[in-house]
Image 1 (tube, rainbow, N blue to C red):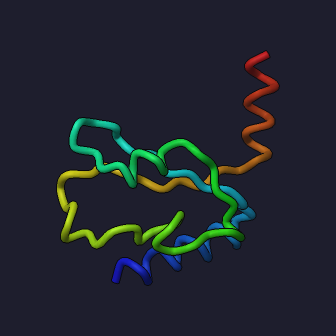
Image 2: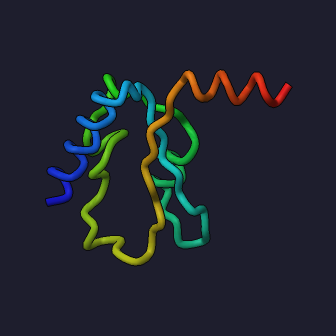
Length: 87
């Protein structure tokens, strides 16, 4: 079921002209190395690889309740607009 949900998310990125996504992990003592490394970098939607840089990375049964990690799309136009306001 998770794979279907993530494929729907990827389709919505395409339909919304979102070309970049990033992981946002809560970095705590119990955050695994895999999610720790994925936290921060931006990934191109066109280059997504499920299990490598796009969900599902790990079976939820292994880490259920111990990892707080979210995926978020990024609009490059919004990033440029934000930088203009920051000076």
